[in-house]
Length: 330
Image (cartoon, rainbow, N blue to C red; front, side):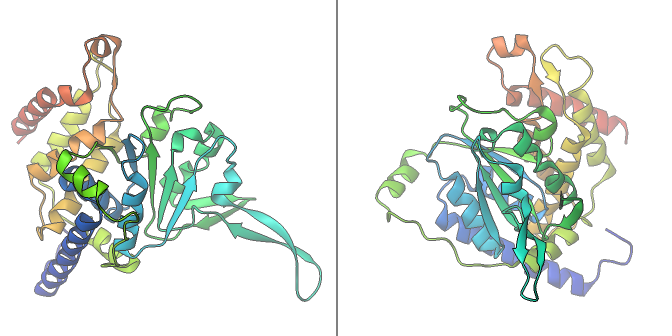
């Protein structure tokens, strides 16, 4: 945290904001049943940190409803893009339209696309063509859109949530590694257990969206404060060593994690710490985001795939080696 930033008034404000975020989590837990720690919390924390998330799960598990519920709870403007092969970049970013002016004459007027919102859901993102997928890259990285030679800033906060159905590969365009890397987390939406499934099947036919607990300005304020949360040098070395260990020609790994992975892990660990009212990051804060931050960034080699391995199978050993390196550097 910056020198002189900590004071009693700041502590009071952080405590107030953290409580409102926890209240938002409670509201979301009632709207979307189950998977609070593994799905709802990481998604909310990523949005509070201004990051982008990829959701993967079977059809009908409520991915779209979850994102709409989070947007409603945060009081943020929401838009949805249904990705199809015939979707064009202008359908996403917006386009110039020639219109007649009241005072006479004709002039071009820019009509904004659905990407101009606080929380944008790109449903079945891998069904859009690479040309349309790439139209989102500038928005995700720079928070702006360039169209017809003019750059326009997107509203803040801004997060893009992409969804994919892992069983429907026909007629899709898999996201390239460089585009996958723009997503801070890849969260799996699991099939609900029998208790949750029972509550869902007897529930009302139309689930109600939660009422707003926060607003866009508060989300921005919380995200700015989270950037100032302290991270010990030992944890910085731990994350750096973890990402570095995924490189270097391991036979089980074809492509390792980029620096963006480490940046995402620490950024979200800061948010998680602040939600608990803490001004420092713990190792537990870091470890909870390691798998979702690396799941889509580490590509396994042929041998590992043949043995049926997954990224999570590699992490215990990688974490242990990384922690040993981090402790040696202290």
